[in-house]
View (tube, helix red, strand yellow):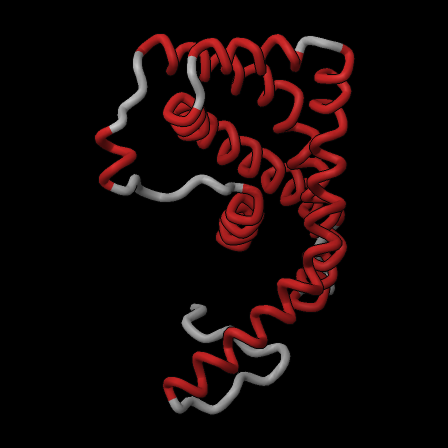
Length: 181
């Protein structure tokens, strides 16, 4: 089911604002063990409220397009197969997001003091913080849906600029972006 892995990677990339690899300055500013622990407490608190609803919302948003594409490729696909695929997609998205939590904790620990991390965790335990955590997945999914058309337009502009510099023919709608595989 490589299509699930590809879709999970796309979904995670859309929501993961964590850089892959640290710039030299960040590596030199390694957080203290106390800061890492405080950051893990904070990210665990956040993850418990965010990961499952966000992956469910992302799946609900992308599923109709994916299901239509699958039905076009295989009109005889059975409902059970689609349900199994959807479940696997959500499971893989959740696993990928949970895996990134450790990265997020390390980043938070580099940018916030122990006291600040503890204050953030305390905020997320207040009624307003609890509401923010509860609504964050919904707001994030809505934000990604609103950004989609803008991102497509931006991709077309980037493709055109790259094609111009590289003296390549511009891509047509529905064709892979420059550098896409």
